[in-house]
Amino acid sequence: MEVLVHLFIPRHTNNHRSKVLHVDALLVYILVFAVFNLALRSLHRSMPDVLGYATDIHVEQLLAGTNAKRQASGLAPLTLNSLLSQAAAAKAQDMLTKNYWAHNSPTGATPWDFISGAGYKYVVAGENLAKNFSTSQVVVDAWMASPSHRDNLLKSSYKEVGYAVVNGVLGGEETTLVVQMFGASTSSLALAPPVAKPPVLTENALTIQKANPSVAVAGNAGTMQQTTNKQGIAGAFEGVTIRPLVNIPTLTRNIVFVFAGVLLGVLLVDAWVVRRRRVVRVAGHNLAHFLFLSAIIVAASMVGRGSLL
Amino acid sequence: MKRVHILHYLVLGAILIGGIATFIYVQSNTSIQFIVGIATAAAYVCWGLIHHALAGDLHEKIVVEYILIGAIAIVLLATVLGV
Image: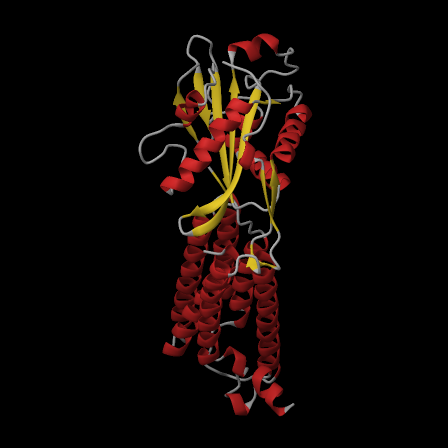
């Protein structure tokens, strides 16, 4: 009991500052978290089945999610095209082989090079990329939350879509890549039903013109052009399901939130006791620390691991 | 609380709200989120030092304390972001 009081309540034995708020204790927390992070990465690399990132992303779910958003906006649903899926698979493979996270490869290959390479002759095309999301719905929601990706998802001129979902190592870390290739070919345009609503164009979206066919890349822009049709998904790129014994995001969040909760609690108790006893001491303002750490926890609670491009 | 302290805390509130808003704005890129976190922590340390300097009670121990609190925030964000 005496030890607990010494640790958490300011009094003469701890120089009127809770021991867990002393400078040496703060330094220990930093070192412990730094070691924990390094150990986590090391264990994840050596035992990914035990300690990893739970992932459940599949093409059919991505397609359903995308089409649900389009239909909610009064747009025609996209049909899955095997050539676009092949292009997406080639792009995903290229990113993992050449270790890059970009619309254009380090050797200068553009998204439409992959689309043309797969034999899809498009009049309009686009690409959305995502990595490290946990579920298909989260990917679609993230795309919808990003204006440029949303523009691609809700572009009325797109008639077909292809996907690749693949797991690999990118930039030294295990990564689940999602490549979404949009397109419309002359044949798909001829077959398409009338669109219920005109396309919503923003400054990030490219206007589609028959005389000047274009490719829209989320967050980027380019021009090019070119048809074909066939349904399907590129074999090994249909989806990724990973169910590790311990899910790293859940583990880290729980540890961080419990630690922060205790620290915030101690800051409040320390401030209250010192104020009540009218102790004069040399220390930072607990209220300021409390507000700052609370803001950091609010930010941390909104963290998702995924990135878009 | 003195009127000048209220002003200081309003500035702190603006720093923190700005930091959170920027953090949300760049939510599709965890690396940039981490940089925003570092910038917010740096701004907090600066705020603390300026606040205590103006109050006339800036002590070496306080400088270290603010730097360590900022560093704790950074390692917590690094842990959650996985960077």
